[in-house]
Length: 361
Image 1: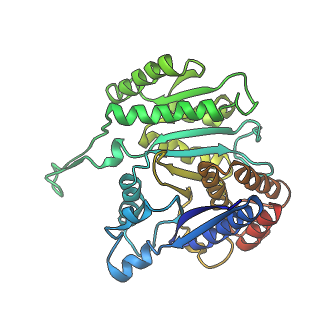
Image 2: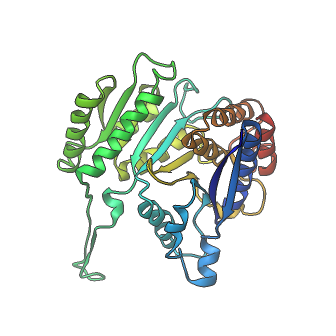
């Protein structure tokens, strides 16, 4: 029987991005060899160095070219010699919007042996998922300035959502809760989806979210328990009682904030992985941490977030056994090998950590 081949676009990006991508691909290749599939990768040089050399942030043909792949594997975007916002908007946000990657999927999971700043909390307590709407809200850039650079300057940026955007995100979250919630994983009595909003202040946008949430739940997902949380209370509970959460769904801005809070509770940016998902198209997987330029070329950055992104990508592509093998190998490494998740303090180099996980597979 012939092997399945997956075409993967690789964007190492800036700073330490190429280093963590190298280790992510090393582990992916080990999984491919064991589980009998092939990765056909092609590398793209999108990032700060290309921009400084050519003045081009992203070629006009980039999105169409990316659509020819099964997935995108990204390192990091952000260059110290490029003004903040140029690369982030011109590459990350543009690809997300052009490829309609309308879900940002963020597991918040504490692995064995990883320190958390939350007192008396362990891996059994910090294990939930955030589903963030990824192409709407404040990030669409609707707004502008009036009388800029004067004492009467006005700046407006609008949070805009339509029912279609809200409903497709909610349906993805309901489906995800049904398949991956705590009950589905044998860790709870039922699967719960919590809507994170601010209905007491953002009375238009989150009224739409809440109405759609309950209408969809009543009609199509009666088996999923529904809860609602204000975003400010959610932040407190993520610190005090993270074990309460199962699957959370929220809009773009709130999702951006709470996933960074979640990342530090699971051990920091070195272990936090995320996916930009288009369920009907091509998706992109990236570590949550930035390019960390001060560590570039030193072979000391933690590659586990990139490695976990590889596992998320394989899960999305349907290679569930391979994804589980990577995660299990990561857990063995964090539980028995690494001294810390921080760059330069792991007890191993970047490449050695990649070797440990690959050997674990």
